[in-house]
Image 1 (cartoon, rainbow, N blue to C red):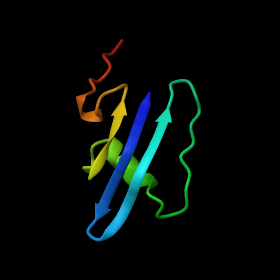
Image 2: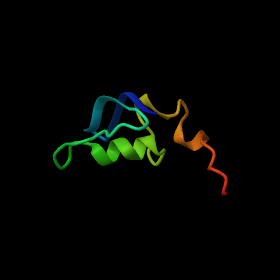
Image 3: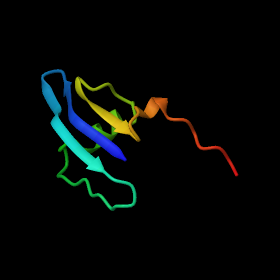
Length: 74
């Protein structure tokens, strides 16, 4: 499960995203839609740890992306 709670990010004086929350459950189709500049890419950059959030949390299976282990091969 992906859980994003109250995620916010500013770039200088500009708001990247403000207080974004969503839950994507395993096995369910979840859409994340918005116009250009709405913060979709910023949200996923924060989820993947490519940028640091100013506030809030972004977890995959209850852990930050950086703490997940790679699946082992067959």
